[in-house]
Image (cartoon, rainbow, N blue to C red):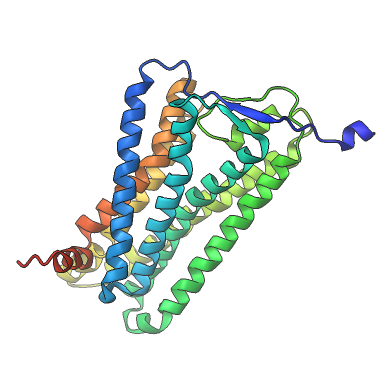
Amino acid sequence: MAKNLTSVHPDYFIISGFTGIPDMKYYYVFLFFVYIVSVLGNTAVMVIICLDHKLRTPKYIAVFNLAFADLFGSSAMVPKVFDIFQFDHPYIPYNDCFAFMFFSYACLAMEPFNLVALAYDRLIAIIFPLHYQVMVTQRFMLFLIAVFWLFVSSLILIAVVLFSRLSYCKSVVINSYFCDYALVHKLACNDDTLTSFTGHSISVLIVWLPLLFIMSCYSCIGYALSKVAAVKERVKAFKTCTSHLSLVAIYFIPLMFTFAMNAYIHPNARLINMSLTSVFPPMLNPFVYVLQTQEIKESVKKLLKIRK
């Protein structure tokens, strides 16, 4: 009985995901480039929004938070991956592994909820334009983002606490590039039914539920625009959604591909695909808003003192 009540915690885990894959040094160079571009791009977006008072709107509060989550998430994951594989530090202490898991997943999970906030912003702006200033205020957006951070952090914390209470006596080798919950729970030697169920439930709440909400918003937007007689007005309204739709595609399409092909691709290919899914959206998101959003392009020209 005492044995069943005592959890077996190893001193460390071994991250071994990329070992054995040929020519990985070129991929690390590529990963480093992606990380640097991501840091510079997201930092630039945050600075532009801070410096330009015209961008202190609810929409750009959500964009600022998206850039912050991308910057923090990339910085929580990529430097650690370099430390593990490039500097040959595969041993990660037990508690550090779960801290790594918490921060990585909390930031990754925040992105779909940022997209939810932006989808709501577009929904109200197009369907209820006369009530937009009342329904979507700075205070409301800040409150919504705070609720999302609290919700996401609580869910990930619950999962991490449950994982930390499992006994790990099968192995300490995690065949991934970080403390991946899907692989960590497979190392447990006691009943992990509750932990597995919690992990799958959280995946539904932080991935598929936001996607369902976003799709519902755009179904309503599409229906509303179909009632607009003037084609020019439809196109003009739809153009305000293109940057957001691009972000949705960048985040969800690779994620759905990973889930769909997970059982059919080689484990090494799965690891590469997962790592790209983690680092590519934070790199591309700033370019989407800088290149597709007129307000930010005008702000950049103003800050750089470039005149048409």
